[in-house]
Length: 74
Image 1: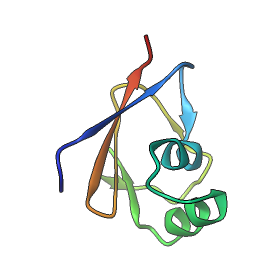
Image 2: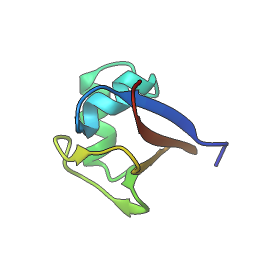
Image 3: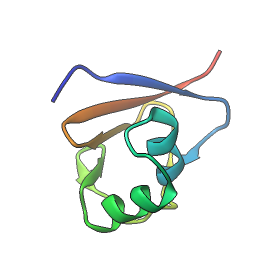
């Protein structure tokens, strides 16, 4: 995996599909849904297949060799 990319969020949590779009690792919601349902996304090292799973600051998300770290904006 490449070095982690920090993804700042304003709220207490963000849905997994929204995070992937915000980070720019998927083009749209349909692609986010597809890669999540196919089991290609991990949260804290465990496969997550729920697009609406809540991800919070401090958690790590992996997809396509990219590691994303959710951080609090500000």
